[in-house]
Length: 198
Image (cartoon, rainbow, N blue to C red; front, side, top):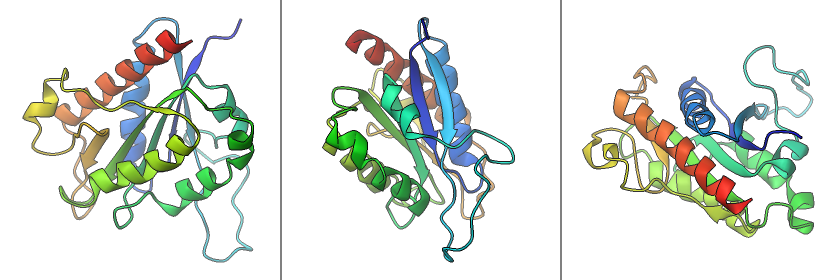
């Protein structure tokens, strides 16, 4: 029998959202009986004739609809773009209507995460923009509870809506220990809820 998995699906431009995804996956895999499956989405080109290889040259593989269909939970991450998810993630989500028609994601837990250039750079609105289509799929939103003490201490990323990171105006600020701990805790929390709902 295959081990149930949490799909940790992200798009990352400068590597910060990917790093959050890796910490969330670490949290998921610290819980027995479930594994993390890291996946990404391809960039969206302005010119439609430009195409990317079907398999990324490095990093996580591209997600498939089957990855999403068979997961027991989802952690969805994107950098912010004017307070919204990035176009590549939106493009992927817009292609999930087949799963929606068949109710494939109904009742599965989902969490969201993001990275922004500034503290007030649209973190919470980006998280909300990602959860909206997931609610249309019938998924159950799993936030970051205040049982994580770092949520009260953070001076950078971290919200009850989901995991966040402040990358700085030049995208050169590394994920700090508080943000890391919140990401790990979020993965653990999502995995525990997903297993309870099996």
